[in-house]
Length: 100
Image 1 (cartoon, rainbow, N blue to C red):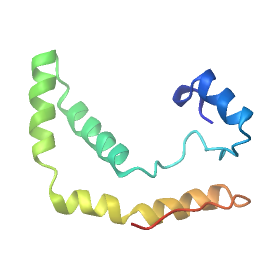
Image 2 (image 1 turned 90 degrees about the vertical axis):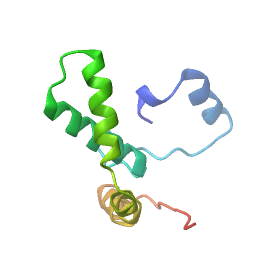
Image 3 (image 1 turned 180 degrees about the horizontal axis):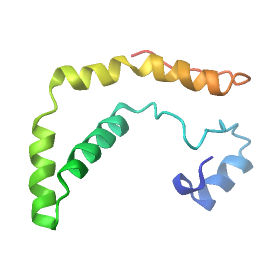
Image 4 (image 1 turned 135 degrees about the vertical axis):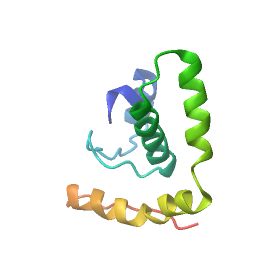
């Protein structure tokens, strides 16, 4: 588990309850589409080089408004490709997922 995303209490509970935890590569492509959306927003806003909080807020709103439903849908659709990439990084792990 990536330590920045866990707490000692949770880690202890998982261990005490014998929950098998997937070792996650620290630099893996994130499977959560919203994380990919945040990364894209960060890239777009950073390109503008805001110099104060007001500018940052305005740019975030403007750039968010540019995300189309089609773009967001493509992030969701790319889930299986990202999962496949992760499986390739962890060849001895049996990853399971649920289709909704």
